[in-house]
Image (cartoon, rainbow, N blue to C red; front, side, top):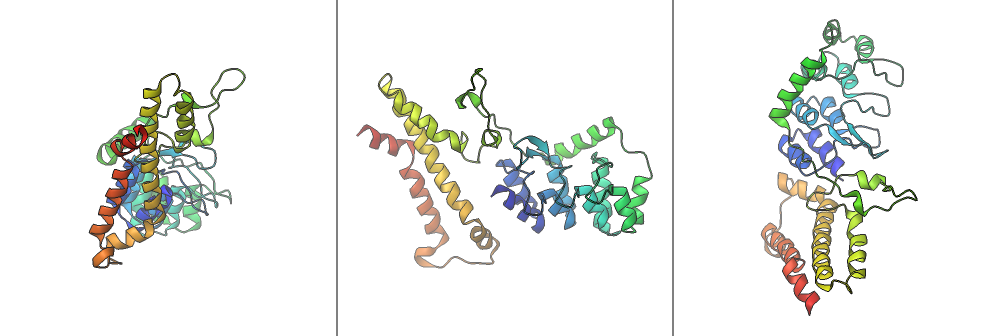
Length: 285
């Protein structure tokens, strides 16, 4: 779901929303059914500000392999990188500016699409003479790319890095942790641990209650709080399109019982019922 939010923000040129989702742990490397990342979408729509933000916050998780990677060189189903898409927009002002930016940022020139074309060859096929001139010079050195990227990151970087505790993963016969694709995914915004670790941890805590009952109760209270946050998060994700329309003014909240104020109060009430204090009281009783 986070990838859909990033692609929507990139398409609508919503820079604040883009930064908000990236700061919350959204994955910039997620791809849609055509293999397009948020960066592809921003380039295709000519939104330079969004392109800068996504290049400054490019590291994420490959949705196919679970490996940590950069979104800049990810290829679509047609083999297009962001640079391929930029040069395919025939001499548009935004396309040239984005092409120049991607080159200065260090985008590779040697990646081929499914038809075996590098970005410069695709520019030639598209009669994009302005873009071709940008490829006639020497590519930036590693030092120049690093300096330019440092400047862009200082301006736009907003991603947060959250360490994942692999110690709860199962071990193989040699005692090494078995790390699955899910273990490599970012921790969802609002949670303190990966979703799939919540209930295994609860099971461990329950099993330990005979030895240390107070510790088990504290762990269970914490886990119930995590589950409550997760439930609210999933509800917001499931209804995110409606939230977006309402916040943009396309849809309006009805007066009376369905007002935005009452809705927010209801969400607050749900969170309070799943708070540590409330849950602890019910557990102790």
